[in-house]
Length: 107
Image (cartoon, rainbow, N blue to C red):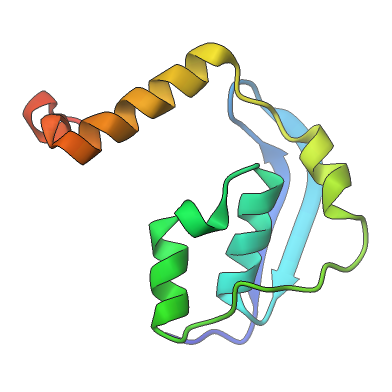
């Protein structure tokens, strides 16, 4: 379904601990806005399956033109993963890839 306007409220974000980010994003391209959000969160948009699928289906673009504050400003304020969170994320990804996650009830 195509939308005329997509809005992301990144006023307060949470990863390890909640942080006031003070970010509101709007775009007519809902794929591009998710790419921008992924970049702020330091997630490679090419590694996000639904973003790639939406692009392949012609629902939007991977490129965007930022307006206002630079993305680097919000990247610097976005909560960073600590080592424990990185290890848990990697372990979860491996569990999904190997199929163990279903046996463990994670999916």
